[in-house]
Image (cartoon, rainbow, N blue to C red; front, side):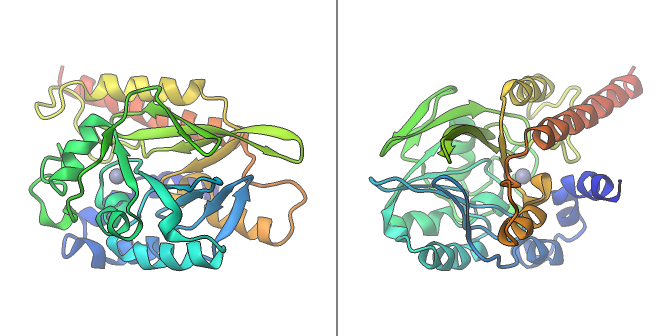
Amino acid sequence: MFKKLAVLSQIFCLVIIFSNLSCAQKSDGDRKMNQPVEPFRIIGNIYYVGASDVTSFLITTPRGHILIDSGFTETVPQIKTNVARLGFKLEDVKILLVNHAHYDHCGGLAELKKLTGARLLASPPDAAVLEDGGASDFRFGGDKAFSFAPVKPDELLKDGQEIDLGGVKLKTHFTFGHTKGATSWTTDVTEKGKTYKVVFMSSATTLDYTFVNNEKYPQIADDFTKTYQTFKAIKADVFLASHGQFFDLLGKAESWRAGAKTNPFIDPEGYQKFVAEITAAFEKKLNAEKAAKK
Ligand SMILES: [Zn+2]
């Protein structure tokens, strides 16, 4: 119960930031999410190279690697060290992806692009926000505390698009709502003769958003509704997401390191439970707002 409450209360990670609008990267909430973590192999060719809460995943292939999310600007040195500690080269990253265009996930992309020379792929709505450093974000645009170094994507993704590199196939799922272009991916990995479906889930929490007559994002409620349906339909075995707190990154990493017999990241029930929780939280908020505006 405590765990569930902790997760639910922390889902609204950006709430921490609302109350601390000084410099975005320097708030206590940010620092807490950006503690170093020993890098490790999650499953198959997927590695954890991110911080204590803002995640970053490395998917290795014989023809170069894919990196999902940069974390904050300040997470980049950690990612650099982590990739090297695992025995890989940052220069071998060929494709950069981002789950959504908020500074805690994309703040380091501009620098990572310089360091790797990789191609950045993004959904069209998030690409626009990445390019203007957050200025056109429908909720946080114009607030300096939420801005980041602008970065121009090299290619626009399509919903359902398969990203193919060195035998790895990542399927793109548009999961809009948290930002207008939030994106998730799925892939299959094989370990000990078994194949598992892995989900890299975008943030899909609703923060302080307004759903009814939102002039800056009129289709917001429909987008969120579609996103939760998409998540529910994904039959994921391995649950990975944009924030460690969504899937108990630190707890699972600890038991994995301690030699757990079964890989703790294989957690289909945990995934569906989390999807059900965030869906219910959205519906409750939407209904309350509709009722209040009647
Ligand atoms: Zn966000």
